[in-house]
Structures are given as C-alpha cells and as structure tokens.
Image 1 (cartoon, one colour):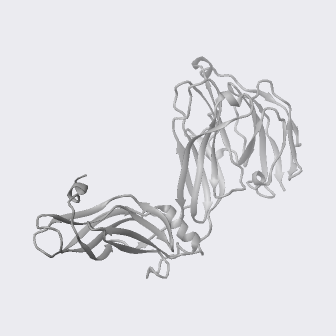
Image 2 (cartoon, helix red, strand yellow):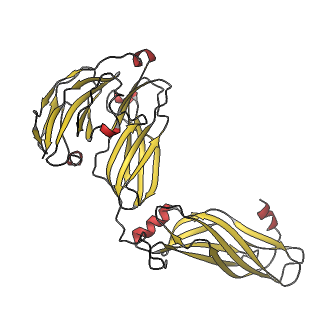
Image 3 (tube, helix red, strand yellow):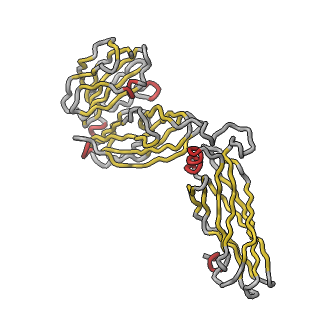
Length: 391
C-alpha cells in the first residue's frame, strides 16, 4: 500500500535500461531452486516538478520456455525517490527471492529446452516500459557451462511408476478402530526416471461400501520427482465419524500406469466391539490346488462367507501371517506383508489375476496365498494358505 501511495503523483520519466544479476544461474531438477534476483533499473526524469516522485515498478514476473509463458511470479517490486534536480537520473536496485516451480522445469525437459527465462516488465509514471530478462540454464545442459549430469534434456528417462504399496501408519494392512480415534495411512511409490507425479487420496464411506463403493477425494498430490527411487505420501485424520466399513486408496493420476491401484480397509466400531477379541472363522478355498502353476488362465475360487463385505486375495513370498484376531494388527507389517494382492467385491467368489498383478510375482518362484473375508467387525474369516508357483 505504501508503494502505491508513493507512485500516485503524476510524473514523466523514461526507463533507460534494465540489468539483472542473480546468486544462481543453473537450475537442478528435483532440488529446491530458490534464487535471489537483483534488478537495476535506470530512470531519467526531465518533466516532473521538483519534490515530486520518480519511480520504477513491476507488478509481476513470468517464466518462459521458448516462446511460451509457463508460470508466473505474482509479487510486486518497485521503489521511488523524491526529485531534487531537473533532469534527474536514478538507478533503482530492486531485490526479490523467487522459487522456480517444478512444473516449469518439467515443461522445459519435455520440450528438450536447456534453459528458461525469468522476465519482468517495468513501467514508469508516464507509462514507459522496458523488459528485463534473466536467463537460467538447466544444470548439465550445454548453456550451463558445467560438467554435471544432464537433468534437463530429452535424454532424461521419462517418469515410470512400478509399484504402489499402501498401509496404515502403524504398518497394519487392515485396521479396526472406534469413533473419534485417529487413523492415518501412507503410500510408498517406487519409480524410475524423472517427471511430474500426480495422485489423489480417496475414501469410500460406510454408506457406499455396503454395496458398490463410491469414492470421494480427500487430498491431491502434485510433485516433480527425480533422483530418488522411492517416495512416501502420507495422509492423516482419516474419517471415523460413522460406524462401518471404510476403503481408502491412493490413486495415481500421472504418469499413466499399468500396475494395480491398491486399497486398504478399516472398520469403525463401538468401543465394546473393538476391545472384544474374536478369532476369525475359516474360509474354504476351492481352486487352484496346492503347487499349481500361476498363469493368466489360473482361476482363484472360494466359498462365500456370510456377512462378508469384501474379500482380499494375498500372495506372500514367505510364511503367511497367522490371523488371531479381527484387528489383524499382529504380524501384518510391511516387511513381511504381501507381495501383491487384490480386493474382490463381496458379490464375487472367483477371480483371474490381471497381468499388472502377476508382474509382482517372479517367474519360477513359489508363493503362498490365502483369502481374507472382511465384514463389519473387521476380518471375519481366513483361508488356510496354499502354495503356488509363478509361471
């Protein structure tokens, strides 16, 4: 407000030149790119009365990739001085700190461009204008003058997600809780390459999980990924306001993936039910038989369980954990959790695994599998494990 007040007096001025310096000239994809930028704007005034103000002002900055504007910096910078002589030339030094958005770098990478420009248009009180340009090179490109690994050219591998593994914050895969308790979850994403990642946390509440689950959005995630192979996204305070069966999932929006999109489940009960220890019943698996070969034709079938809201088919590299209570908290840790699995609606008691699910199982390796029935009270029935060899 003070800046605008100073500029309110009418004056006539000319912008002679705009120069720029910064503490950083190279940008690194996947790292914080915070830069201190100093603009030097020379203004000559020959018409404004003595004791009036002359100034330089820029309302916003912009990022350009080639000839395309791909981002903005919506901060105003400017300064003014009182005129004491006629004519009067003044150089205004204007400093700002910017954080180059990851999306800007991503678009430069996709276009195969090795540098971006940060621009500001400056004006004076007579509506004269001049543009200042700061050139920023992506580290490792030919324009950066460096010898570091190339991050900003088309030789960088495209982002590819090869695993999405979900669990609750206490590492359990199925959880029983009560109204008002805190429930949190996390999704571990394994990936290769570099690019923009987008995902969304979604929840299906008891009103819909009694039939066909209807998911609503809880939280969206957008982040530029590079250099690391694994990243974990967390969500806190999942809803526990209504009794019943909830399904939560982290769905990957970008890049396009062929892997299965997992979901985990929790049940909200009254306190008396939650604290009650009840051993789950038995679930009878039908096919395939022990030591069968697993391929695209293999059909998994089992007997229906009364009260089931969903079934979970799971595969383990080692021993299947023994389920001793409805809460499934013991033995269901990520380190010895299932290699892969799939959620099956209660209306179905058979399924063939899609290629995306079978990809987690190494050819020739023997796995153990079982089926879990999930009801309003949590895990209500479990099948005995069987062995199967991936083909």
